Image 1 (spheres, rainbow, N blue to C red):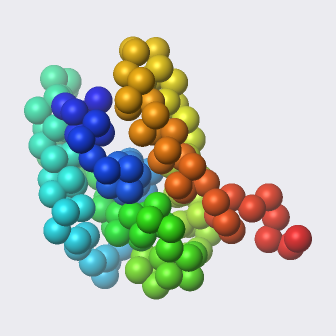
Image 2 (image 1 turned 45 degrees about the vertical axis):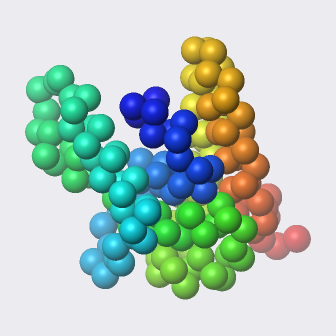
Length: 145
């Protein structure tokens, strides 16, 4: 998947890369991701550019990926507390929670895809990704417990 980028990336990097698929808000003052995350984002854009053989505006499609929360999601996957990632992301709490929950859904679908094509190593990495992000307040059933 994605020319082997998913296989080669660390779990935290993989999760932060997936955030580009679920985050669509354009943040005017968004900071550029750290260098290693920025390189992953560039790989994503390159892969998307090379893989398109359809009649769409390739430029606008490639620029539709948003790296705005990559660093916050990376920190979340590394075990940071929610208030710490909120300082990084500077977005509405509910929006970030919704994005991380969507990422978990995407990861579950990717696990099924990896399993169906026999990629057991990738499947294990994706399952580890789910276990790293599915925690604490983001996945609490209610905030009023």
